[in-house]
Amino acid sequence: MSNEHEHWLEKSNHTRLKHHILQFYLENWSRILADASFHNNQEDIYYIDGFAGRGEFLDGDLGSPLIALEEMEKVQRSFNEQYPLKPLRFHIINIEHNEGNFIKLEELRKKNSTTVSIQNLHGNFLVESKNVLLREALKNCACFWFVDPFYGARDFSFDHVIDLLFYPKGSRRFRKEVLINFMTYNIVRFIRYDKEQPFILRFLGADSYNEVVEYGGSVKLEEAIILFYKSKLRERGLFVVSQRVQCKDPKSPHADLIYFHMVHCSHNERALLEMRESFVKAQQHKNIFEKELNGGQIDLFDLELIDQTYLEYSKQQLVDFINNNFGLGKPILLHRIFVMTLQEIQVSHVVICELLHELWKEKIIKVINQDGTNRRKPFNKKIKEWKSIEIVLIKDKVTQLETIEEQLTLF
Image (cartoon, rainbow, N blue to C red; front, side, top):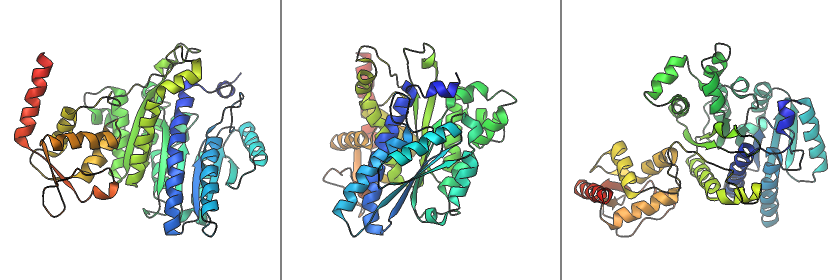
């Protein structure tokens, strides 16, 4: 029995969690883009699944193409019922190299009665995706690419990520974004192997192994690789957020050694916020997933984060973060704080807002309006306010806070 066939018998815990993250994100993505289409008269929105598989598992569980269809069908039906004179069309394009999987996708497409447009393409992802990019219909539309390469680095390259995000050449007008299942575990294992290294370096956008290692400094290889990759994307002006996931599986004792990152990149700030919220939501639903998978008896999921900050993040940590990145006594645009924290800290923007409110009430920070006056009311969580408000860390107050923290630690 091939590894690929075994993969489709039933969802592994890795795959289940990955699909939950995808589902949470598509739920918001489809609704927000539908609302935006009302104002910009954009009728067509595309979801492209780069390694679609067979669409469903042998036990009937949904694969990523059907998860996407389910979310988009709900939003499209609701929108078109509410606004019959402003049509909205979601399009799903599934790319699959394996012939047996492709045949199954076609069977599902013919069986499903839906108003969402579905097209299945049989072929290599790099070839077929380039053909998709050449279509006139996609040039002026929002596009979301889900790239989950079955064979890892051999199936994808850094340059191709850039092509997906900036086509037509250099365009930022329409919302383009990519979610990659970044198989860090395999990259760490094989990056030193002569036969695999060229493919991995192409995947990372690196010229040499030493370039990756030196970028990470003294951190372990796994962290150096993901930090390097995100830095390369950010050099292109992209917003990048990632999540490290490590799962346990009672059926495979060594499965908990395997880890991967979900890496999301876009030139849209709103997308950054939405993906962070999807990661947070996955963590908050952790107990539900455990009960779903094993009757609630064994802890199956173990989300191992490089920075364990999902459920606990203190005022002092936030003060230190702002101080280290921006300094004391200097006005910092609230927008800059959020953009950086969303990318670097594993917490929701709501948590950051609440902590900033507490720091403001304790007069550890000043909040300044666009006209230079001190703000008398707490700012809210609306994105539109982020570019009109500045934060200032008050030096004396920060020192006092550090002293209090040290005293608490002593006790």
